[in-house]
Image 1 (cartoon, helix red, strand yellow):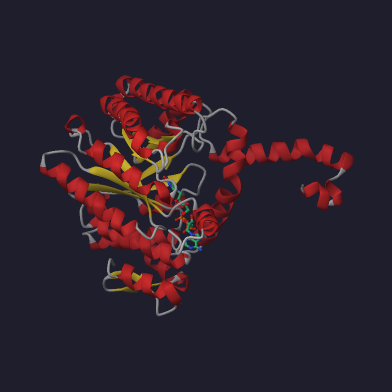
Image 2 (cartoon, helix red, strand yellow; image 1 turned 135 degrees about the horizontal axis):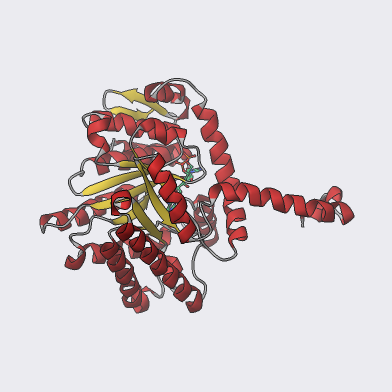
Length: 393
Ligand SMILES: Cc1cc2nc3c(=O)[nH]c(=O)nc-3n(C[C@H](O)[C@H](O)[C@H](O)COP(=O)(O)OP(=O)(O)OC[C@H]3O[C@@H](n4cnc5c(N)ncnc54)[C@H](O)[C@@H]3O)c2cc1C
């Protein structure tokens, strides 16, 4: 306990301070939670949608894996209810909502045994649930993104996604999507697999699939777990610059398949975003490419970064969940630090190229081919991984 080590936090002083600490965490938490219920989120989103024409919305139920079947059933029901609420909104105000709504789902939240050991037994049930969610979203005319989770579940996630993408009943729906984590050593391979899946779907006349590119939210947990298991190598990069580089390599690879995938670049890092925009320039101008990809941020994070990109922006993440205060508190430290960093970067005057120049120290330089890693500053295994990934740039 912190109070055992900090005398000032003991006794009546602690009791007096607690309500204020509570108030403060709640106030900060509110900044990152869009609304408490899907109904209030939709009302608020309608106002925001009218004010900012290019904004889209992706709603996410906060919370991680289901521990019990009851948890999973409840999460599944909530997801279906949220989609129904969005469906009602779309049918009432189609002009406002067309192609602007999306829901994210974590596979671990809709099945308590979503893990490699149980997968063979539970695959049928999981796929059945997923098909119900996807079918409902398709009928409602909204998007669905399957969130990326622990690296151990990557092959399960891909297997289920492939089954969904192969379902002819969902071919005419352009809202099917998946998140890919750039910090995974298998990131580029994952993007290649998705391009193949998307290519097959397109060949038989299906719609493109959406790929949300993220860096990955579970870095500490991945490293810790690999250490506990005594794995020979980490499943994720352990040099931040390599994750950034991998992100750009994946972005470039995705951009090579714009006829079958719709990339969604989710990042709060202005340098990464600037590099993505340089990539867009190379694809024939940001405005030409704008219709073919979008930038995403979480609600509560600084919007100037994505606003500057003048692309289609997805403001993400309305949250609705019980025990919401705990959920908010859990996501606070990371979000606050990232927000501060973003603000610091964004205070710098100048456009995308200037931003890249200023952040050359973060491992990039601009070549004629676009952003590439700056110099041989990577060490040991990182150098090899960097070389491999540079092939994708
Ligand atoms: C709209 C949206 C949706 C998201 N959905 C998901 C999702 O489905 N699944 C998911 O996992 N995450 C998701 N995230 C979170 C995302 O993966 C990142 O954690 C978050 O955006 C921070 O990355 P950044 O590019 O914004 O910032 P940056 O500060 O540039 O990057 C921070 C990231 O770098 C990586 N990193 C940090 N230290 C190291 C190191 N030593 N070595 C290697 N890599 C390191 C980690 O991935 C860390 O999160 C989402 C983010 C957004 C904006």
